[in-house]
Amino acid sequence: MFKVIGDVHPASHYLGYVKYHPDPHGDRQLLGRTYRQNSVVSKSFGILAERPECYVYSDVLGCVITGLPRGQVALHHSCRAALSTIHANPHLVRNARAGADLLATIDRIVSLGARELFGITGSFLVGCFNDRSDIDLVCYGPDGYAAARELFGVGDLIRPYAGDTLMQLYLRRAKYMAGSAFDTLIKQERRKFQGLTAGTGAHINCEPIRCDCDQTFARTSAKEIGHMALLAKITDHSEGLVTPALYGIKVKTILSSTVDEPDSFARKITHMRSYLGAYTGAFRTGDIVHLSGKLVHTQDAHRSGFGIELTPWSVTESYLATLTG
Image (tube, rainbow, N blue to C red; front, top):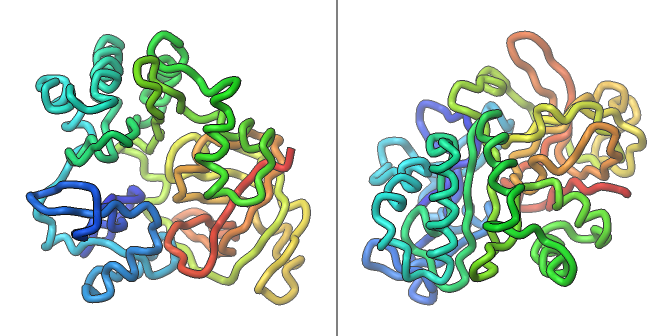
């Protein structure tokens, strides 16, 4: 079972990674079999070693990634449809540990008149939830972002991380963002839609993604040049509030590079693009950010330039973007 990533796909494949795969030692039940959950995108290359047709070059990202050939799609799980289905059939999740919290959240979304702006993803989408399952939501476009801000802004249903629970949030994120100081990581994380449910205290989050009509990357191509670590100032975060996130940046200092004479690129690097949801909405204009990612040349119908790309499809690097203070 694949989780789709991104909003631009070639005619041959849906791009994504293996989220659940058959394994007798797993703890999820799907389609009458035991499955294991995978949370590391790059592990898909190994899981799919006997399925080379699932390796595909992406012009948008400029590298080989994993995906499912369109002709092999057996079942499509729609995040929007799952929300409506659970709302109409609450018995499907009521007995789950976080089931009552999920139902209360859906009721609030419906009362806001925002049903079409939200979807359910994660284990509740595919029906393999267990006692450790979080509540994972997505919202769509600017209207969805505004509705999510209202949903997470009322404390009776979702409590923000605060006090003793801040360490819980730090430990949850620090394993993916090695080296992040407590205060700066918490500052970064508090900008995102996440918290704890008022009922069971389950983690709940909402990732804003681009609306169906968004064509920002529809005609974009990328070519990988090398790898870079640098300090950069965020010059524009308006396109960084949704996944895939696009931030305007100005390079302050290049720390390391696999490219000869890296300083010659400094003035020409103007943006950072992230397919990692962890960095959606995490930065604001004026922030100084430590970036470690791919140096790419990007081009669309109107312009070309250089940028730093954070992609989960890497078996050799962990790409990071963290506040410096």
